[in-house]
Amino acid sequence: METLHLLVVDDEPALGAAVVRVLKEYTIHVPEVDLTVGYGIVYVDTGEKAMEILDDSAPDLLLLDHKLPGISGLDILNYLSDPSLDMLTIMITAYATLENAVAATRRGAYDFLAKPFTPEELKATIYRATKHLLLCRQSEKLAREKRRIRFEFISVLAHELKAPLAAIQQYLDIVRTADPAVDAGLIRQLADRSLERVKGMRKLILDLLDVTRLESGQKPRQMIWVDLLKTAALAVENMTGPAEERGITMEICSDGPICVFADPWEMETILNNLVSNAVKYNVDNGRVTVTLSVTQHFVSIQVSDTGIGISSQDADRLFKEFVRIRTPHTDRIAGSGLGLSIIKKIAALYNGDITLESIPGSGSCFTVTLNTPMGNIPPD
Image (tube, one colour):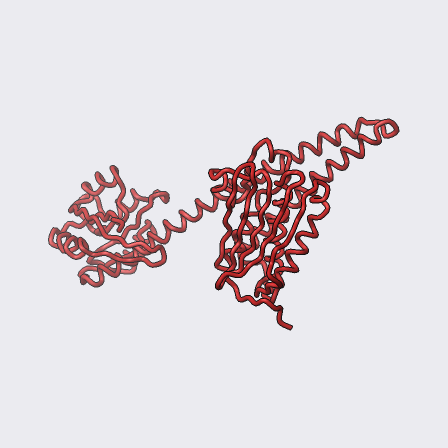
């Protein structure tokens, strides 16, 4: 439970004592922020004493008498005109006129409580003010978090794009001064490298769009029956060229067709990313095995390789966005650092998850579990 600090300022000691008595054990729960709060109450009977407290530390809530001897409630409101103060003021007065309410509101008061008031009226007013204060704080917290994430996102994106752009610029500078008649081979080589860099940047942009659409819920989903065995075969076929160049063998293990009720793009994305990574991070003459199975209510997609593996410390970070483990073995391998985080987000849509078992130097095994309707024979 959180405690909010409430300062009560009124020149009637009996009223001040009554407010303390009513609110000292009063707690409220605000479900919108899932928070229960109580109140730590300080009572003073003059504006001068209130000013001393306000100068030292502003409370969360201020219950302020409109008419005080010496410094008045409106004087204090004028003093508290700084919009950065994270505090709400409730005016209390025996003169509940429209003019007084307008004057207090213009000076920053949140609410108005007319004397005499009942304990229920006091609690209702305090509840409204507390809820408003907590929701405003939550909104500001979310806004700060949004700004922080946006800054980190732009920083990482700029870092990921800066290196390939610098390389392309360097290649073009060389091409510009090269003699086509003499350096034709070099020019072709630099053009190929530039195109490879452009391909990497394009994949990064497309992966970013996929992440954004998944998180925002704006990517349309087409839920139909999907044969995972056929999807896995296509993923393996897509990587046949790069695998054959390095002598990597690929196989699919399954008892037969496994039909799941899912979005085809999501299933293709899971298998394409896992198989692609298994080839890219494998060793020459290695092996990639795709295993499809059904366990109770879950379908399991398992992709294992005989590649470079990863340490347990690095594995904990692997499913976060833009995370790429930099080692001498991975520096030359292109990637956006988004593929595994996309898989994790897709698995969550099916109340599933992705896990990793890996031994450095001996390979990795990624397992995606999905909780979705399934069958062994695709329906007609």
